[in-house]
Each structure stands twice: as structure tokens, then as C-alpha cells.
Image (cartoon, rainbow, N blue to C red):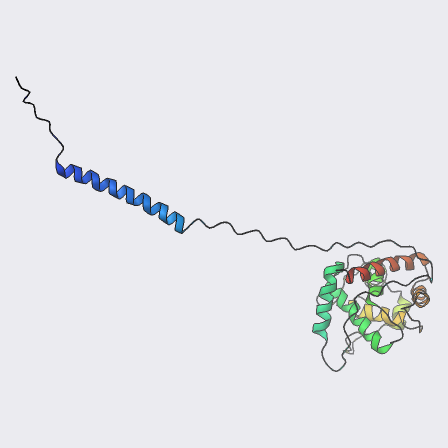
Length: 241
């Protein structure tokens, strides 16, 4: 007897639904791949290289008295009595600060003293680096306010450690406002130290003149040798590449 059982097939509507579902899934896969290719996940931005930090240290030297003068370093800008030169001075101080690790505000005071002595005592040839050397010994970690005022240290008079007698004799107000000079103000202290060093008519650009002026400032050879070391190190750093 012939098999009369009929094979049933799924209705056409189910086949259509399955095909549609498969089509949607395939379309989604294609879209995901396409979007991923066209819009890749952005890579993390490269890390910026750290800015190099200038290292500075005083190189101890023991020159003989009168045997050598410290280097002058990067000269402060020209003094301009009839126009403002503050922007030039600030730019110079910022540049030297990056080389010497001295505060720019303190360097501006040393630089201003050099500028004024260059005009008032041109034969003195005082460099800011000598004032920085004196400051290094007096107050190695000197910090001042925006107005130039330094905290009292308890030893010596002001950040450059004047004696009462030397301050009384050479003190001069730096900004010319008519007020008394303040030994705790770095501008007044630097200008007074410059006047003190240039008072004897010595040429501080020469070994004999520098030593004579410094020994007049402080009669200790050990002290002057230490100032020499600091001043020469600051000057060398200021012109380093």
C-alpha cells in the first residue's frame, strides 16, 4: 500500500518572518562594523613632556685674595631714567631666575642696583651676581613679598645682614618716595649694599678692586671666598645654554 502521509512544510508567513529577522540582524552587524571603522575610538592624547628643571648648586672655590674676580653674568638691562624700564627688568629677572633658582622678585632688586650703579658709578662695574653672592650667605632661602619686604631673620640687619653702623652710613631708599630706607626691604637693601661696595672708588670688574671692596664690606677672607663662590656660580648659571 502506498504511503499516503503528506509532509507538511511551515507556512510561508513564518518563513518570511524568519528571513526578515535574519536580515535585520545582518544589517545591524554591518552597521556596527561600518561605524566602528569610520569612527574609531579616539586614542588617548600623548602625554606632554615635562619641562626641564634647571639644577643649580654653588661650586665651592678658594681663590687667593686679589687673585681673581667672579664672572659678571648676564648683564641687567640698561637704566632708562626718563622712561619705564620695569618690563625689561622683569623679563631679565624671570630669565635669570629660571637658571639660578633665585626668586625673580629678588633678582629684580639686584638687577636694579646694578643698573643704578652703572649710571651713578660707572667705574665701579658692580654686577648683580656679587649682590646675589652676599644674599646667598646671608639668607640662602630668601623669600620676599611682592613689595620686596623680607621677614626678619634674627641675625644681622635685614636680608643682607648689615651692621647698624654700615646701614646708617650707606642706607638709601630705592624707589625715591622720600620715606626712610628699610633694611628689611630687598630693594633698599640691595641698593644700599651696592652703594657700600662702590663707595671706595674700586673697580669691581678687576680682581684687586673686587677683593678690596669686598674686604671693606666684610674683613673675613673666608667670608669673601664664600661670596666669590656663590657669585661666580650664579653668574655662570645665568649665561648657561
